[in-house]
Length: 184
Image (cartoon, rainbow, N blue to C red; front, side):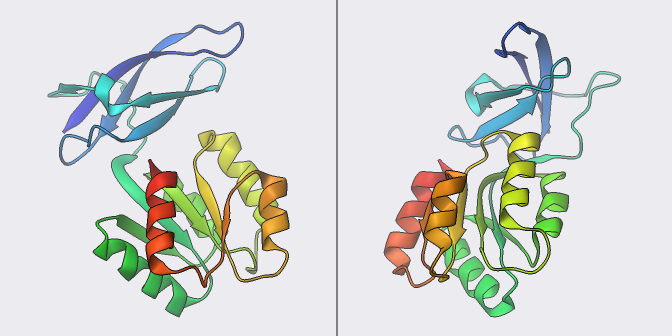
């Protein structure tokens, strides 16, 4: 199924009106939020599924960029056991969850998926957290993220990056409640 909405860029001096196309297996839930990039200025435009119209075929040249619509939680952690247990807990709570072991892999996933929330570990090999957050914001706007770590300095780093921080020892009920709030 394909859906279309017309958006207007609100970036200073732009005002460009453009069509946004989304591909989804079913009608997207009414509480999902999306971000699209303005083709003129690359500014981010946020919109909800309430503005979507179903269309039968894509017009020539329409680009869905391979991105699928879902209320996806992306869990990034280099510890496989933690990824698996968190993924299972979140799936039991009704979330669609995708996991990966590195921030580089996460960026690859985000080129094909629309995430409602990114849950990322602080202390991981490879790309630094600060660089990852900067790249995500540059490409996808203010996509919600939460730092999930037991490291003693994690909360300070999270404050610097303006993202919330949860301890990996957070009680499951509190964790699920926080993730529901953050993912919209």
